[in-house]
Amino acid sequence: MRFGRQSRVAVLLVALGVGLAACGGGGSPQASWQSPGAGASGAPAAGPSASASPAPSGKPVHVRLYEKDGTTYGVGMPIIAYLSASITSAKDFAAATQVTVNGSPVDGAWYFQKSAIYDGYPLEAHYRPAEFWAAHADIHMDLAVKGKSAGPGLVFDNSLTMDIKTGPANIGKVDGKTLHMVVTSDGNQVFDFPVSLGKASTPTFNGTKVVMGKSAVERMVGDGYDEKVPWSVRITNSGEYVHSASWNGGNIGQRSTSHGCTNLTEANAKSYFDFAQVGDPITYTNTGGPTMPTWDGYGDWNVAWTTWQGGGVVARG
Image: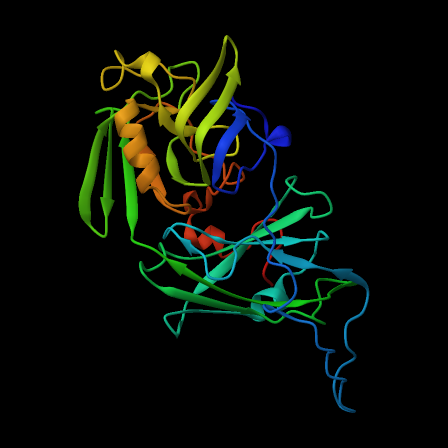
């Protein structure tokens, strides 16, 4: 069972306890803000010169980042910002964003979408380049938006910086025809697992998903089941996981019979759980389902780059 968009819940952190979810369910949201401090500028904005245009004024818009300084993510992880108001112009926000990879500027773009994850933050913005990030890289971002316009009557009230890293390029590919999941790391194959995907009435989404979190034991509740499932790797807000399914062993590699999740044998699920990092992309084909919606987790890579550059619900211009 999958829940609808309004009831979607993001499990954004690596959890090692027992959660409550479903192959289409969720758990409790957990904020992991990059708050003002060492990575944020709280200094007063410089006053305008006599010839400068008046500084924008209005309702303050606060920005918070999901990623934590010094953390390592997979190459598919977007940079995620949450905004405390629904801005109407992203022009200054985009212009103030400076991102480098190993010291070199990167050509990336923000994509804005409505958000129901955190109270008081109705908008989120995801930043990514046209292709996956480079592996084993240092990523630095300056977001010098304090005092900049967010549209008529709106002004950003803080600036932020961030430093994160990428790990190895762990790339998963799942084929609904062959019922296999092949995983490579920095171009070298490390796994080839048989799988069982969603049955016809509850098909697995096609498209590229990104690892959102991991739980050693996840409670999954749905129509006709209530299970504590080991070695669960979350890949959508609506409740798709890559997980152990000992009860479905006879179908793994033979036919798709799940509620939408990717079923593995317990040994293979443990191997993938230990290997996977938040931000690792997995691309699904031939599942019989629709493409994963952009809002349902980190569906960013399912949006064409030219469309992404348009900015989503807030135009860049």
